[in-house]
Structure formats: structure tokens, C-alpha cells
Image (tube, rainbow, N blue to C red):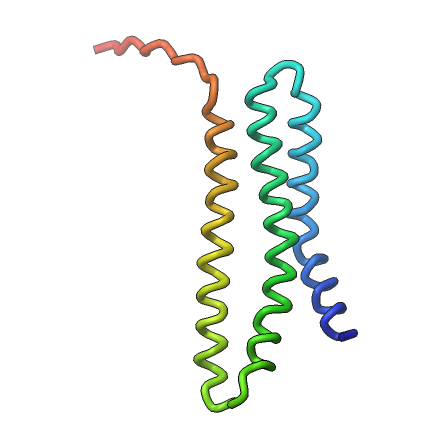
Length: 122
């Protein structure tokens, strides 16, 4: 148990720059709330979602593979089980992260005035 907590703590330390960037983005969105309420709301939703995603999937990646391996009775096909576990976790993790990034991209391009066409010198 102590080793699992240390591994989880180490995984969170490895992701510290990402956590700090997400928190800075959340603070920035909150400070811009009065000027751009709709955009700030979408950015806030996306960044909080991505922050929760980061926290949850760090736990999942540290707990689920060990739990599945320890609960499987035979160790003959452990490598196949591990590969499948990480494949499924990767698909779920990246799929949910894509939702957060999609909302963030929507907020980035929301309420942009159209740019006038540039005149060509031909």
C-alpha cells in the first residue's frame, strides 16, 4: 500500500507542470469573466474538466492495472492482459481528453469577428 501511494505521489509530481498550467488558465479565465462571460465560461468548463481528467486518470492508471493483474488467477498471459488494459485505458483517457480539448477549441474560436479580405496587388 505504501508503494502505491508513493507511485501515485510520484505520478502527480511528474504532472505538476500540467497542473500548474491548467490552474493558471483557470485563474486567467476567471479574471476575464466580466469582459467575455461566454468565452470564459467555456474555457473554465474545459480547463476544470481537463484538470479533473488529469487527477482521475492518474489514479486509474496507478490502480486499475495492478488490481486486474492481482485479481487474474493465472500469470500465463499476463503480458496480453497488461497490453489490453493499457489499450482500453488509453482509448478511454484520450477519448475523454479530446472532449475537453474540443470544448477549449470551441471557446478559442468563439465570438471572433470575421477578418476583412486582404487586397491582392496583382
